[in-house]
Image 1 (cartoon, rainbow, N blue to C red):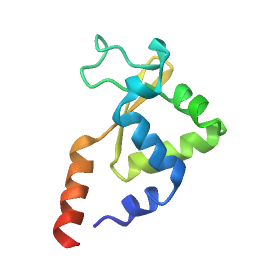
Image 2 (tube, rainbow, N blue to C red):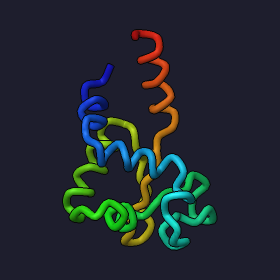
Image 3 (cartoon, helix red, strand yellow):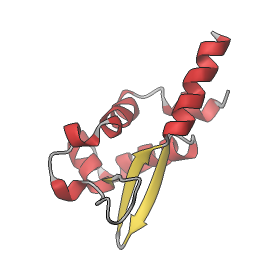
Image 4 (cartoon, rainbow, N blue to C red):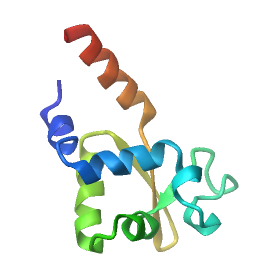
Length: 103
């Protein structure tokens, strides 16, 4: 198993981010926070709105999102000056299956 994944999952805020992105419509009530389906079939949440919800600095959230993306748990998409993040559901499913199989 990928050590980067477990390092990324070792922080409560990073776990919360994954939880928020699982059902973004429940956690981000501003319509402008969510990537319009017209722009992307996959959707996503703006980094600024993730930062606002967390209450942490922009640099901290950026490093958390980068770590989750490096571990393969998040995907990002840039539109203009904004970056939108979404969960990589295939990678999360593989991780869950691997844990289930090994443990």
